[in-house]
Image (cartoon, rainbow, N blue to C red):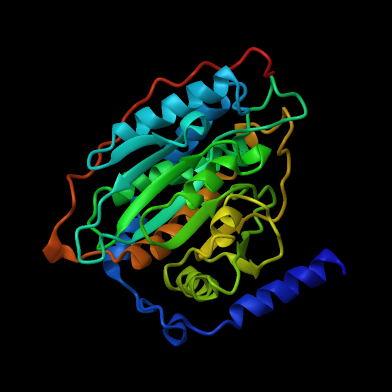
Length: 319
């Protein structure tokens, strides 16, 4: 079937999905507090983090660049007040930051993650900007913003390792999860829109169909205004690790992979306005699923200040 027909069909299916109120998931009314939170997502933060990650030259699993990138991301998490940061999975080195819940649902967990390893036709030259430096940058920015607010449920922000060699990091986490996971949101290949078409694919299954419908509602409600498709991509990414273990999981995906898995996957191919809107859409749903607490509850910690980071130098092989 021609791609255009698939695309139109996907849009029709998702936009015909029942409204969130009919799914049993609350939150289909506009919330000024959530809208204000979305405005905190900073495009320059996404750009700076993506730039830093590509400049490790390679983040292929098992390389020095991969280990250095993990240390860099752990340090970025540690600089955000209110987060508890740890490495999990032994040599897999998943980097996980926890924002403890402050309500009666704190024993339940909402997770958002992205893989930070990269791959390429030349593993010494694997900058991985669109796949998946920008996805990791989105998760870091969500942590920065959400840490300044209070939520009923616990939120975990995760950087998975070894996705490109079989989703090993996320499999380890999902297999050994101690707390009930209410929802997992994945960012992978979610920042590439060279023609400014604003098409975003929502990849879900029967366990997460209600949440996908909520995302469709919020896309209009909070003005992220993507042309949404549903399950155009099978996308064997980290969300599968959660789905196969019975957890509701959604991933967002752009139309094409572009320069992914090549030495050309550099920052100039990343669509940062698209990435910012993708982060905002995810944040709206995460805030709802985590149970954002109102102004009376107060913020969890003072707002996280912007930090100027020393960015690794541009590798000599880029030119």
